[in-house]
Length: 274
Image (cartoon, rainbow, N blue to C red; front, side, top):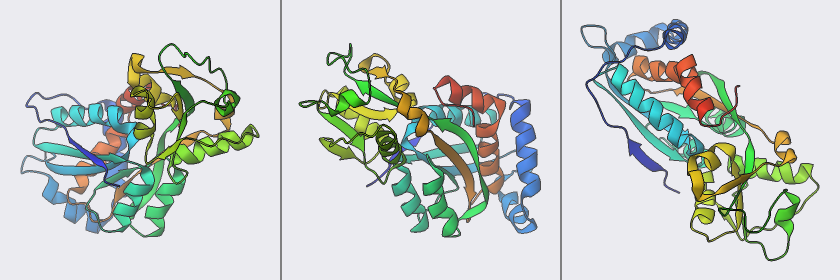
């Protein structure tokens, strides 16, 4: 599975980094070891400004929010570039442990983050920055009158789930178990965007995805809440990776994600406070 890659565009206009973001950056920088500090000096020009490219591997559900934050970061720090690789967290973790070059990893679950930390590829301790909850995505207008998770077990309905190895798939299974329900989908998809797209393309009647993805799809789908989702809320951790080429710049992006400014973008997209 090859994650999709998106490069945000550079711009010359300067924005001031939010105070909370700057404070978080100072805290993160203070935690860096002497070796990291020496290496990170290459990411600053003679004026002390951040520079260089940061490669961020992030869960597919973060695509819209992180793209926005990447654009804001580049505006605030001319001379920097944020490149994203979005996909299923399990595939991204496997790529990182397999040697794929990346500076930052944002996962949709602690379990997939643990794959990276257990392999010794994380620099420092991952921090949870948001949480996410499941929702049922139906066709616009909800023509099948789906009102609960149990309704997805009705005969004749074409339902799609994320693969169980992916955080959204594991969460869906946890919700089904909480409701004592069994569901055989017409397909298991490699990430949450692929599952949602089946409904958008009218190839499925419904999919169990994240609330944030339903919101991002706008009027292309309709969302249905279900109580079992409260038993399957996912924490999203983020970490700097070992071997990062521009440590100061990578840490500054993480600081933005965890700042009040970053939190505003993420919660505006439907993510929950950590």
